[in-house]
Length: 265
Image 1: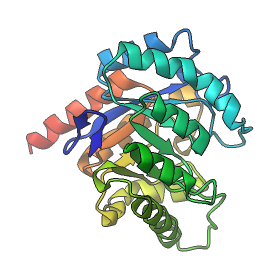
Image 2 (image 1 turned 180 degrees about the horizontal axis):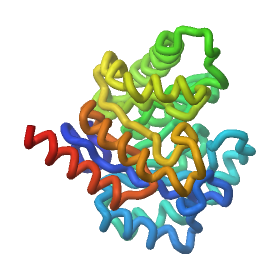
Image 3 (image 1 turned 120 degrees about the horizontal axis):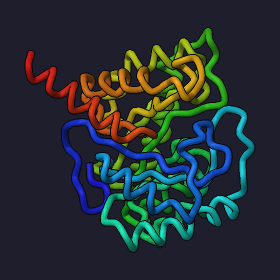
Image 4 (image 1 turned 60 degrees about the horizontal axis):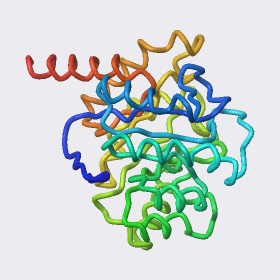
């Protein structure tokens, strides 16, 4: 997969989370425009190969902000990151307006938690295709029934998202799939998706796993690092290309340790 000027074709790589929000579920991930550069610099030093910034929390029960407010939070940090760092930059948004502005300023990938379907008119896919950039398509819906066929519901959503991407003209080597752990699923369903993550290989696109400090691990968010690291090790074993995480240094070491262990088998 190509993101910006870098190609990722094997291994497991780190996408670092930088939240330009006052209400993201993990307080230590929150940054302001003034300290965003320091956060990015540290993430790079700790092993991040892609930076993912967002201007709106998507935690459960979040209160949505407008596209204009989201862009207000993102504009200056994007400018500063592009000016100071040569690293692939992902922007977490489901608004076509924000995506267009971010891509014009040099963002390399749009991380869309609604899989190109939020606007309902295909405009997000068209914006990304116009600028020739990449997309992370995440599976999502308001709620998956506990009595449903979980995987079939997920595949139905992703089938539509992938079709939107291809029909709009997004390059196939710039598409990434995320199973949407923590979005519209019960705790049991989240674990089922995690343990069967390789089923998403059916699409033929690289995968991203986002489990960092999520509620599926139980307890307080500050105590969820170790189970997050276990899920990162699982991602390595399942050949997942990216993990999107808060704790870059610890996850980088977990990847290295798991690769070493596998190499010793």
